Image (cartoon, rainbow, N blue to C red; front, side, top):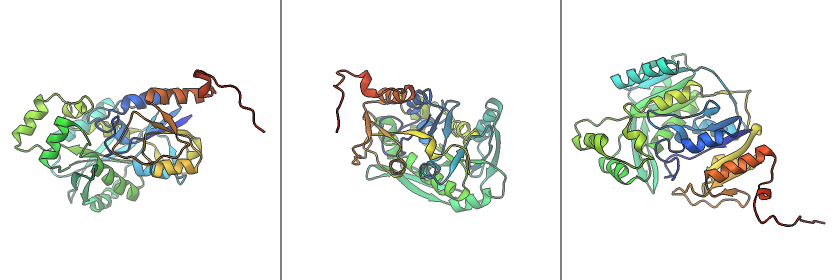
Length: 332
């Protein structure tokens, strides 16, 4: 059994819309299936990544292509990771890469960008978005090297008041939307796994530095406050990220898609086209209110979603474990 779990980036998901707070739900679902196929937004928690051994870390646009049936996902044991960074390379990045090599056993090299990658994150109409500049130059330079997966570590400019509001009051992560944009653009050209990690450049802003050192935040945001470089989660994910292939796991091998409620986009449409059941989790609300087809399976929370998956795995009709059990239907 293979399950796809998505929590789209930048739409204010109650669970998984902050900093790796979708991980417990992902670990629960992964315990019930052969492979959990998910994307970085569900798992990335700055320097923390609790993905299981049977979790496949797949960039969003690659996941869309997989669900459309145009590619297969081939499991790998070890990727050559290239880390693209703006000049100068910060000591935190070097130490983070060294730590991943020493603890994960990862194969990683750092590439200084000749032309810097510039990213601006903002909130528009209640959704995280932004602007990416210099990504074509990054693609061109990286193609000179031999690698299997690309990690990007670069600053994201977000207005000061937006950052302060997020840390004090929560809400939509203002960095996530532009990160997803950059990864999608670059992955579509390289045809390889890609993930982005922000560099936190506080400069001389003493208030922001003090906030990072002393503020107690929403637990869903806390991973950002205890992290130093924000890169390790990406390196762990890309270490064994599946490669795009003509063989391996196909969309025909997927048993369920699990999604937040009232969220309908390309992954859902691909699953509907391919007859894959979709479980929508009611507790995981977002800023979206898309109309869902009637055949979506509604689960109150991820615990109930796990129960639905467990029933399928055991060959049990979910209604048979509920009460009252209705009389057997007779049809003509």
